[in-house]
Image (cartoon, rainbow, N blue to C red):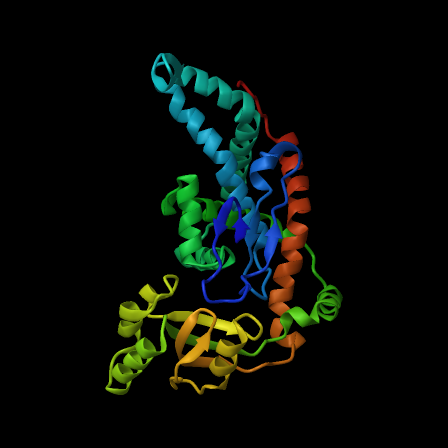
Length: 342
């Protein structure tokens, strides 16, 4: 089982502890933008081999968690105080009680978040900063990858009760913030080369294969499927019909790319021996009988600095961003007239 930001995900049925993208610990914001620590200290899956935009993802998730309390408070004030939200036996809990509870627990943090958002909005207007739809979509795709794919991303959104529209608004806000702060960050060529030397292994391209499979529980069943494939049957359609791997059957048996040492040995040996487009004979593992089709391959490649320079620059910027953000926001707090009336 793998826990990601409060969501427990089961590993693929037939893998032997198949690795998911490495996880990063969410750093809680400090001082004026301090978030609810206990809610934010989950883990977020990162894009394998890439640390791009970690700060943006952290800021976005933080905004969502704190925003939940904020938005809840806003809605509650418009409802009559005697409206009942829950009952325990004959005792009622009113929205007024709920409001006061949320205000006491999250009010200060939520208010600081809204003040920070307003400052970002005003500063972006001063500097004529805008975010295009293309930039937003590109960042959304990157965030989805960091969360381990569309399925896990959707599960996360559902668990917090957020729509794609709300999440996209958060992305625009954070891209705006990035454009405001990046001019304050200096990254030298020497910094980049030093990081490359210290982390060279993470930039190497590992040998990988993209494959699909059909998993059945007996050799006779596997032979039946092979007969249909040999007669011209569609692999994806047969995977949906026959495969007992519930994690991939509806996707036509697709496994995506995976490196060595992530699947059980019998399966992996055959998968890496196939040429793209080839289909294996039934392969027996402890999970049953697999029919494997190779889709594509990536050969192992040594890390080259020039090919990773931009990626390294993004990583170093993301590492410096939290401190720069806190300093910048403290400056703006002193520049603007701010009245807290909560």
